Image 1 (cartoon, rainbow, N blue to C red):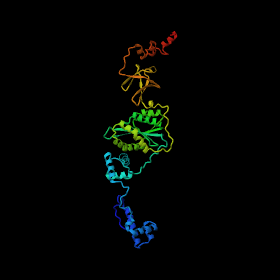
Image 2: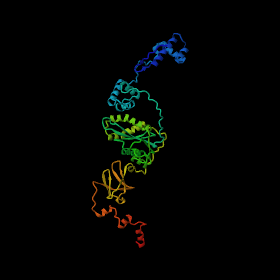
Image 3: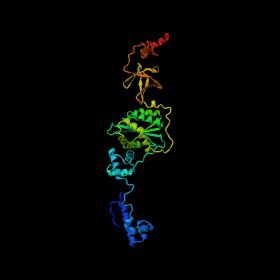
Image 4: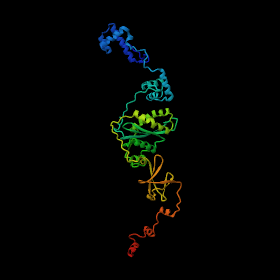
Length: 436
């Protein structure tokens, strides 16, 4: 057996690894022994794991052209499909100018979109490795934990979470991407906000329900917008978001670990890889512009690329009919109306005007702060009119003043309440005898 060099042999743009080269050398040696009469065709066929007919064909080629005839005839020739070095240099130059952190798949998409270079992901990966922009990585280790199976129907469960991140890099302030993902399909809805606040989460969920309908369950973590974590051992206290979901008959479930809601966590990682670069290419640096881009382009493209068909075709979303989303998705607080008809809320004073006759002094009023910042005052199902005032007014009209003051007790009631008259007191018994 001949000794084989471990170096690769160039074939005009291709390469022959040591295993391929070893097989060619072995074939040449066996066919040479056959030509010299040292072995028979049947033995040569066994040594090369070929049929006798193939051995005759190879022997004929060797006799006519020598050892070189046993190698592929295109060896040493440039492939007609080889991409020119000019195209490769232009692609690598564009990637370096716009984002040296592009991955092969994302870079392949953007090269076709921006400079009309249509190549495979594998070609782009080789270019990135060759230019030093990407390091080859080993195969990932197998996950020891089995992933939870997706829900069978769309609308059975939504995962909701926020991802605070430096989305605008050095072009803008740090913010959070709030995301809703359907567990069965992977279809998402998202929006940017300064923080993961209850109001912004309500806007996101309200938009989702208006578009798709009410889901059966919302799956999220133990964060402050979703759960009251202080002095709530019984779990009966609810956040404003929890109260809104309860009114919509949507179950709120809290995950006990980040791994339990891994589907939305992996979704965050995908956005942090792709969305950041999309925002960079468009020079987007504000929350308003980013939300506009999400709505007009990114979400539709992302869902088309990454969402899947559910296991069952039936849609489990429920109707939003008979649910007033504008009233449910509000921040609600209870206040007591004072004797002068004044209600205080967030260091502001409000005077009840319309439907004031239904409210008694010390009555409980529900104040709803809507998602657009406006307020509404409610007594059960009755909406009250109001106006904001700067300070408590001085009431000069005696009739109005009496209406808001408690009635004075009579002298008889005073004596009764003071304990002078009791059912068993001598004075009460004497009064009964006298007919008083």
